[in-house]
Every structure is written in structure tokens, then in C-alpha cells.
Length: 277
Image 1 (cartoon, one colour):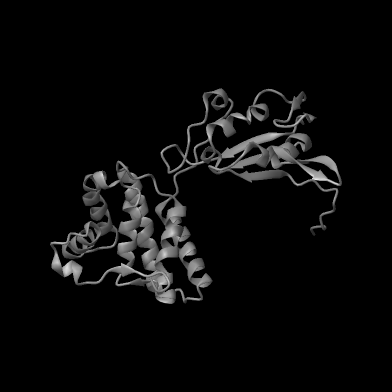
Image 2 (spheres, one colour):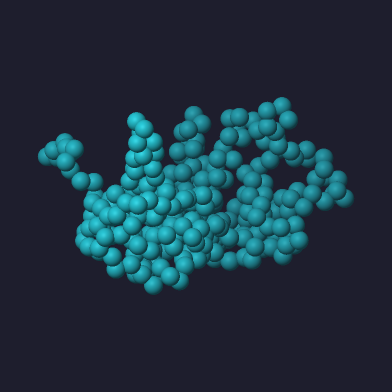
């Protein structure tokens, strides 16, 4: 039988989610003015250092190199020593029970930065095992179902099949390692479903199919000068994952390229709505 947690129980870890806008004060702590006095509030990392907890740096390499370098005092052999907390005059003693774990996607995934050499040697690297296709399909189905539920939209058998096709597309796209297109993650899948499913509920998109969304989203990071370098390969992968005919995929490709010479594409009336615009 589990007993209720008391105020004296120690939580075993502190976790901080890093991003491009993360500042040192976000995890070390910051000062505020309270009743006319300057008071320092410990951040998640300072709490972990002092209390001997595990600190989990989630999406560590999304932060800038200067922010990553600031964590050197937590990675250098300073256990049991007195150290200054950056930006304050506070001195703390690092507990011998403190541990540091960084979770991140590999460099090359959109927005990820290289870990600075000054701290890279302090890490023991553990590669996360490549998930099986069946596992990715199940996750995509769960994401799809959750978004449908949030929109009060019934999750259907065809939605499950579409989620499996999306999983297949992401796997094949990442395996191809196309230039100008970063490796996809499940965040990209979530963003796509959030664009596709409101279509039937909010009526934001007229004559735009899920395949249009997939093609346009995939190509969104590609500059105009590089479109012709990758679009044919992207269309081949879409055709394979969604079992499309040549005529179908050519229609989507021409729609993306918006060739004014192709009258039948102009007459299909593909456009997007936001409000009354």
C-alpha cells in the first residue's frame, strides 16, 4: 500500500525543458525583490545540485552553445566542492548524489546544435534504440486519436489507416536523408494532424486534401531555389506511402508548383481560409 507523500519526502529528480530561448537564469535561478529585500529563488538545476537529485535536461541541444557551456560546473568534477552559481553571489556545495542526464535528438534534426567541446567530453553517450515501425505506427495512431478527441471528432477506421501511412511516410522520408529537409520527429506528425483534422470541423481549408498538407508541410523548409532538387523524391515517397497513382501525385506536385499554364489546376480552386479571409 502506498503512503501519502509528506512534505519531508524528496522528489528524485528535477527536469527542465530547453529551447532556443532558454536563459541561464531559467535553471540556475533568479533574484526577486520581496518585502524590500533581494531574494534568490533556486532554479531546477540549483535545487538538484544542492539536494543530490537527478537533473534531466530535456531537449538539451535545442539551447544555444553559450547556455550549454554554462552547465560546466554541473559536469566538471566538482562533487563535494563549493561553487558559485552564475549570475549571483551564492555559493553552494554540490551533493555527492547529484546526477546529470541530457536527452536530445541528433544534430541535423531541425534546430539542434552541436554540444560545445568544453563539455562534450564529460558525457557518456547512450544511443536510443531505433523504434520498430509497429511502435511508430501505434504512437501515430495515439496522436491522431487524441487530436480527434480534442476536436470532439469521432476517430474512425480510416483515420487509423491514415495514421499508419503517415508513420510509413516519416520513416521513408528520414531514411532517404534528402538534402534541405531535416529529419522528422513525432512533433512533425503532431503538427500535421493539427492542420489536417480541423478541416472537417472548422472548415478552414477548401479543396485541400491531407496529401496537400503533407506535401506543403514537407516542402515548407525548402528554399525556392532548391525546390526542384527534392520535390520529385518527396512525391515518390508520398506516392509509395499513400498508394497513389501517377496522375494523382502529378496533380499534387503541380498544385504545389502553382504552374499558371496548367488550367485544370487553376480551376480546382485550392485555397485556405482564416476567418473570412
